[in-house]
Image 1 (tube, rainbow, N blue to C red):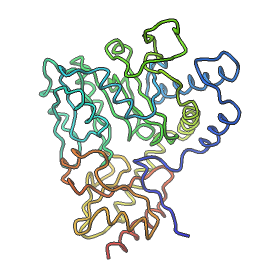
Image 2 (image 1 turned 135 degrees about the horizontal axis):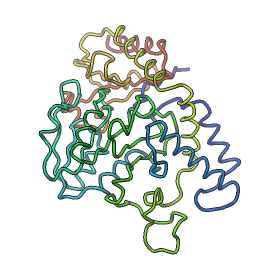
Image 3 (image 1 turned 90 degrees about the vertical axis):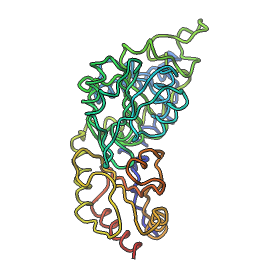
Image 4 (image 1 turned 180 degrees about the horizontal axis):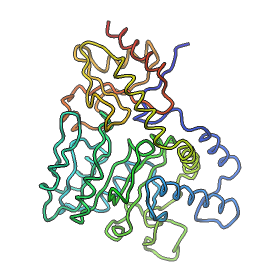
Length: 379
């Protein structure tokens, strides 16, 4: 039987945190109730878990307003809510070329004026050039915390301070860092933080969300309106939180799974997770010696996540990925990673890269196997 080695945690984590599947199954088998609707015991118990999950996210991101923690189906929906609900075509936005299409496409759809903060050849934004790009109509700074292509971690604290000093809405894409790298919304002056449950948070697919500072809520209209279980006599969407942005039945089973994974992260601690993942990156960098392969991004463990981007200079990246899976059972990700402008900045457009992304559950033995498999495929 062919071995299976999972190296695509940048897309979604696998395995999930211990207990996630069992917690979701228990909800489906023994509770099954909706939230914010019924007043019977099962519904109230489910609502308590949903609220406690908001509290856990507040603790994780140092945020004081659990009613301003909004659940969505993923971070793409969260970023769309932030961009399309807050911006108009008359606004100016500063972002970077490293952004995911979850930011690029909504910005293009809104039609606002966009200025791109320059990045260096390893994918780090040039924070020193940010202040000079601010205009009179700059309404938002939107920044990816860490590149999903090469793993570069940007200094969101420095960016947030500049945004705060100029009273500019600061939105952060935390898809690759939530659950791995500490994020402090207060210290970093983050006004809107998007997260997804199925990556570093080690939870299930289909659950994500955002946290928004109360002072900006009046300026951000909801994208979806409908039943909230509150103010049902009114034909208008409630303005109170979190109902303003949470119409319809939420993914309660997903929230139960996320609650369990957040509990696991609390037990482990983010420092333990991050240090383990960086030890795996260092192990790979120390042992991977392959001619005609370019390591894209930082060659060290400083200011990065556990994402390894490889560009095979004499072979087709897609063919290498296919051979790794078909011959050796290695799951990787190849191509543009929904971030074509990032590849343009990194010099890997249009071929993209082969991406290996580790998690807390990845082992050195698996990395040895991957390195040897790449060597065999390239011979």
